[in-house]
Length: 192
Image (cartoon, rainbow, N blue to C red; front, side, top):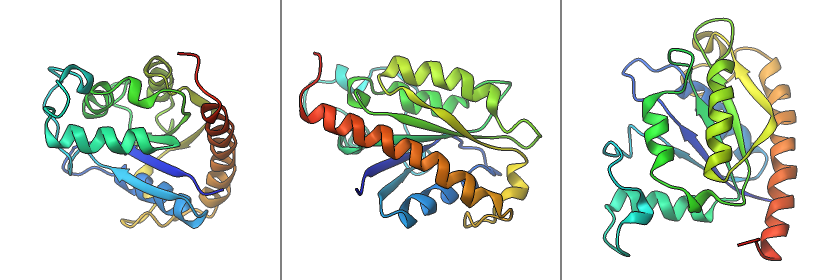
């Protein structure tokens, strides 16, 4: 079953390498027949969090927040692509995620994490997992870590290592299972 997936990327650095991992997972989702949108904070600049989307009177939120809120509400699941900055998540990613709350509810998330070194961003992923759960979009058990991201994909997200498509297929199969299960459950109603 085709799903509406949002891939949320979190870096605004000039020489960012993680965009390659984000493009890879977008391509992998589309190859599986899913409607997939990349949310890139460079293309949708947000102010530092002053008010959450829900704190604006109806129709008065900035246009960028209205657009993001509509995309988040329409999504069946989220894939968050995060680098590791000082063993934590990038500030631009935290800022983007924190602008919303109820909009994420009752839908799963999955984490693609990366780093320039050998650990693949897993330390940031552990902090991100707690944050996503608090936002109402608990992450699936599996991660897709990408060590040495600068050597893993080309600029367009094509893998330079034959193992990534296989690992992504397993990762996405798990996300699809959770997304379809929660979609069916939401159709029957939510607890509150």
